[in-house]
Image (cartoon, rainbow, N blue to C red; front, side):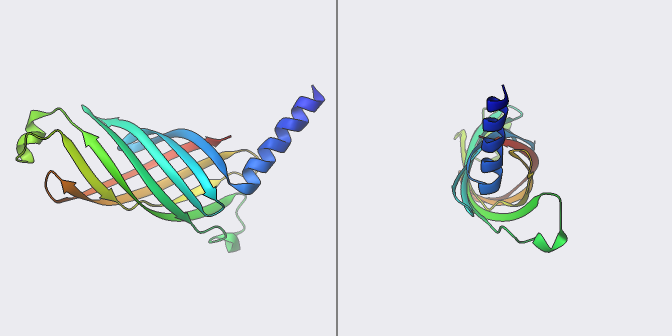
Amino acid sequence: MKRIVLVLSLLVAQATANAKGFGAGFVLGSPSALSAKYWTQSSRAFDFGLGWDSNDMFFFSDYLFHFPGGFDSLKLPARLVPYVGIGALIKIYNDSARKANDNSNNSLRLVARVPLGFEWMVQKFPLGIFLEIVPGLRVSPNTSSEFGAGIGIRFYF
């Protein structure tokens, strides 16, 4: 039992210290989604989401640039890491009123997005809590601005 606790403690410490690996959780907001994040370097990651908004389903993916140490002078009990990214959202909707607003029979919407946020990396547990705003530009079926925001949590493996 002591060996299992020791191994788990080392794994948790390693995952938290490196801020690398895979994280899974959820985001609540506009839109709400199941969320995943895969770190490729200590300051770069991909995030993904699969979710819903009313009758609509969507998938998004972003490439994120993190700035570790951006708030080290605040002496917080956990790392607060700002980030910015670039990505896309694909939304599938069934609502005929939305199709009429888009002047299209197309049920697919494509949005270019720029997530801006902060992730609070808890030091003693492989957990990340994040807050982000996501301005975007709808490029299909017509051009329009989009905006999203959310708060979420991920557990890192």
